[in-house]
Amino acid sequence: MTKEIKVQDLNTDKFIAEKVAEISASVGDGTAINALSGGVDSSVVTMLGHKALGKQLRTVFIQNGLMREGEAESVAAYFSKMGVSVEIIDARKEFLDALSGITDPEEKREAITQAFYKKVFGRIVKESRAKFLLQGTILTDIDETVAGIKRQHNVFAQLGIDPQEAFGYHILEPLIELRKDGVRMTGKALGLPEELFNRIPFPGPALAARIIGEVTQEKLDVVRKATTIVEKLLAGRGAFQYMAILHDDRVTGMRDGKRDFGRQIEVRCWDSIDARTATPTRLPFEILDELASSILNNVPGVVSVTYNIATKPPSTIEAV
Amino acid sequence: MTKEIKVQDLNTDKFIAEKVAEISASVGDGTAINALSGGVDSSVVTMLGHKALGKQLRTVFIQNGLMREGEAESVAAYFSKMGVSVEIIDARKEFLDALSGITDPEEKREAITQAFYKKVFGRIVKESRAKFLLQGTILTDIDETVAGIKRQHNVFAQLGIDPQEAFGYHILEPLIELRKDGVRMTGKALGLPEELFNRIPFPGPALAARIIGEVTQEKLDVVRKATTIVEKLLAGRGAFQYMAILHDDRVTGMRDGKRDFGRQIEVRCWDSIDARTATPTRLPFEILDELASSILNNVPGVVSVTYNIATKPPSTIEAV
Image (cartoon, rainbow over all chains, first blue to last red; front, side, top):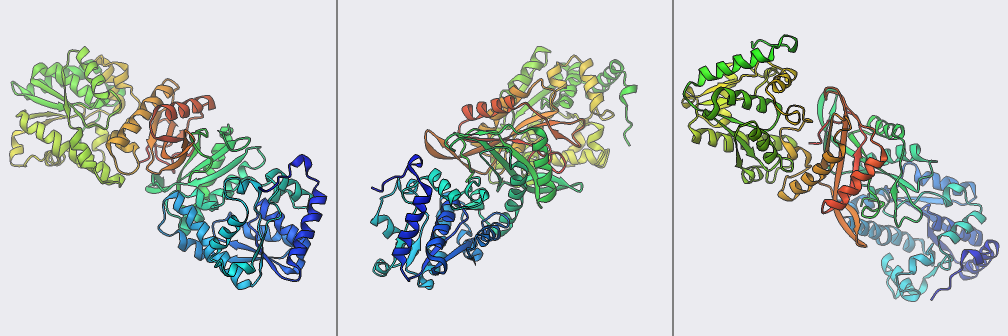
């Protein structure tokens, strides 16, 4: 069992100094690699790794094409300001290929995981010849899996690294004793900008979780544009999470006096404490009107916009 | 060209007396038949025909299985109170068979029209041996079609009656000089109950217009239940039209702690003068909550409910 450091016992300065020393001692004069997603866990690991290793750490951001508008560039820019160089790997084609023809939500999630580990990150790790892998695993991640060695073996398997070869590799998980709140505190202490450690939740499968049915380039472009509008109009209203969902159904609309069999965007905006239960935010109708007209006027092919009015449960936060 | 009687020139008592006399003179001691849908046009024609012909008129209500809950029975009950007997023809299987496998909205509408005229009503007309057909055509219906003889030939063709045979048939259209407002006035003068001549618009393809994708018995049951709830909760709020739409997309939900890949109902409620443009009614969130929870708790398989926030245009009133 991994021990837990609770927030009330967390001395962030001491924690950071210890983890930096541990990483530094483990890697020695070798090289390490890590994948930054822009989420708080991988951001904190990147900063710890950078403090410990400087140029001996290679940080990659895998552009899977499922991110929000400008996400890769803005994450890289934040880190650049803090002196950390982030390499953006264009893997859009690999992910789109992996998702082609898949409509089942579970299979979609699995395809993204496989594309990430086996195809893209696995290849980068092997080609890099780095033997140390920094991971942002937190205690919550392992609560439901088998902890320790077995889990680390699984990481190698996921990466397509042969267990025989794997003896040369080391996985470092400096956040394994923390939960999310502890990671956020550490992020703050490391000087990460508010936007990075306090962002609204965004699902692992990214925009693919907000497309019903098959994920295609055209649908990604549509949901990405709608997401930008929804996040811009709903930011700062205190909602727990808000999103645009692209439906697969076509509905009848009218454009320039002609019937236009178009797309529908569903907006969800949630009030919640911990995502276990949630209720739709009672947005003023002026905002709902603005959301609808802004989406209808700026996102090509959309003729219909709805607002979620169901609670969780029986709904879930995301639609896929 | 058919002459128009404008409402300001309409003397309903005189109009009714004239039409009753005309129908009576045309049919003589023959028999007539008409299809009652419960809409205002066919209801007014039924009353005129009844006044003129009594037992010489056979009025059928074709139960296509696409109607709202209890619709056939409640329409028949209204007319029974006024001394008019309405025969309900169970054609549910014919319509469901005709719709099987069809997902395109235009093809769906066409399949319903064909099933109505060619299969069901055409057969009833021929079997009835009635040679007079009473129809609720109004002036607006023929504005965009070729008026007169050619149009009546088309009706026979639609009914699958050979043009040679058709010489024996006569189509009577007592409302052809009126538009909707004139028909409503006439309905009032005939003593039709408020509910019949002032009902909220309901589309010709009925609930099939509110099912995205293929129409099946299961989906009809779902959208019918949701429609009952929506009409009950939104009646009397002054909205122009309101409806429940069943999506074809499946969305993720939770039931009893387990993932449930379920259905979504979209509620639309419109403010409009003439249906040419429309805006979503700004319903209080208490009502939206009540709509959502009532649908989620009472309609099996539904895990998500949305409210339309788009205007027409670019949306349309109905979704299919």
